[in-house]
Image (cartoon, rainbow, N blue to C red):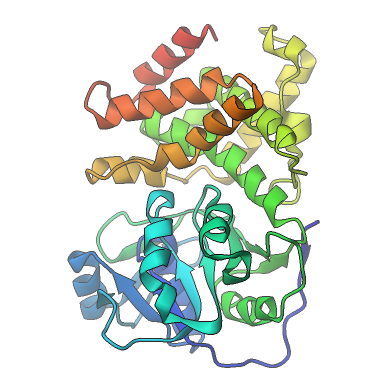
Length: 358
């Protein structure tokens, strides 16, 4: 169960690496820098490194408009490390390789900290060992509207934990670091919290990519809300088959309740459906400025990480014999957009719904 952790009394200096300087990475790096942590910030994007080193981290949005002077390195400096924490502020499809490249730079008791959407902790734990992995689920949105500008698109928090739910003194140190950026909660059910976030992102990130707009305007459309509910419903069913005990989203939204019943899936309207649509509208209002990072990846010519979101639901559903047609169709649509066979926009949303008979 998630709860706000006590503020640690003693602060111990940590050797910290932030790998990646997109929206979340930039907000994280700037907040740590403001707090006097002096993280080593690394990117492979020459434009970002040049802009920040010249003008600082230019922040806007929910965290306030300001400039934080800092330095971003283009690639990892020779001899850097060892690190107590390596924050992986990378897309889901880059996290495993990013961690593999830095394994020899971790301190003996150091840990990778997963920030991205998807099931990064499970993937890294399987490859490098569970003791090397801590989770930090991010509930605020961030984007980079221009090079060197980092826009926090919503308020939010971090939720920290380990996959096995065990206490770990490193979580206290991680707590102290991340409080420079946003409030912090702890959970003894990181897997349940991460799967809840996965279900949410399978809906909002992927539909945001297909629809080509921010979340607020998109969820005003009934068809988008219905697709989101269907995607989350399939995700909840797969999570149950995986033995996952889902946590409430943002400590408020119960996905088990939000999931559609078989009867509701056959209905075009009912009081229960109205209430669930209203819950999606409320989430859209809270995160109305959120813009899918997957959409940004597509616009920059990068591979969209949809296989690490909806693709996880499809693959694991197949392993359990659970149909996931809406996630599969959404995944295929994102690939079609990436291949230039479709375009992001409401017309593609409507085509997807028509294909599924929704």
